[in-house]
Length: 107
Image (cartoon, rainbow, N blue to C red; front, side, top):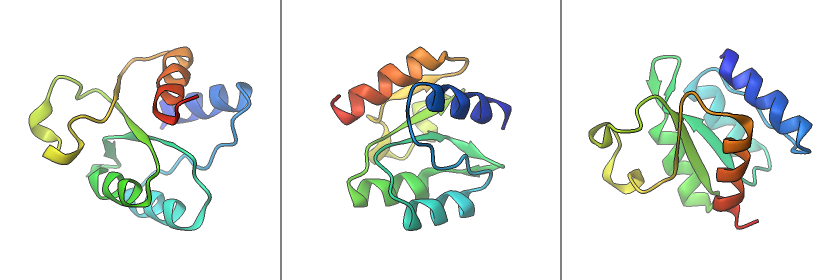
C-alpha cells in the first residue's frame, strides 16, 4: 500500500486526478463501476486477490490500464487475454509510471 500511496502522490504532483488507491479487489471494482476513469494502474495482487476481474471489467469498458507488478517475467500467472497488457516492473519510478500511462492513453 505504501507504493500505491507514493504513486498517488507522484501522479497528483504531475497534474493527474487520482481515483483510489483501492486496498481490495472489491473496492477497486466499486471505484471502476462508479467513478470516471480515463486509465488505471493495477497491482496484480490486491490484498491477496488477483486483480484480473478488474482488468476484464476495464477492458470491457474500453478503459486502458497497465499492471504494476513484481510478477513481470511470469506470464503463466496472467490470463491469456491480458498477457499483452503493458507491465511496470517493481520497483519503478513515477517517471516510468507516467511514461507508460502516456503510452496507453495515446498522449
